[in-house]
Length: 187
Image (cartoon, rainbow, N blue to C red):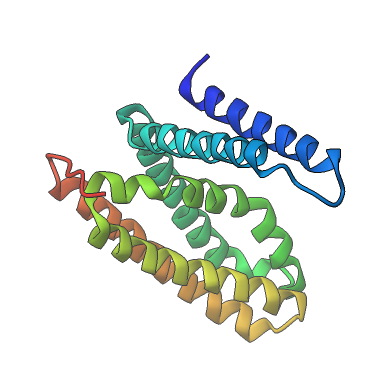
């Protein structure tokens, strides 16, 4: 059993023990038994958090996440360029379905992996990339909403803006990855 499993077991036993102790008497809680049970749960949460932090900082996880980030941002940019080129062939109200089909998986993959940017390159590069990424994601959401309302001009405008922001995020990421030959562990 690894540390994380031990921690989860401690939390579970603490929860069940505390629930049992409080159900014995509806008017009185035996604090001499309840408090140590609560402490076991708190220790379990601490153990789980330390194990998760250690996993998040492991070289294997960081390498996989950075690969996911790079591939997902490249697919997002390529798909945005393609969608911008072909947007006139879609009715405005159909673009939202294309967004759901083409972008959601990569947007989620990038977001799930993003912390590794900070672990590897530091908080300032993380903030720069995430600022452009978040702006692009907001524009994608605006495109989706404009598409749902059939606002053709807004769909077109925000697709272009989304593309610009994601290209900026990709270029910042590529610059950071090229510039930093030796990784920094700042977090």
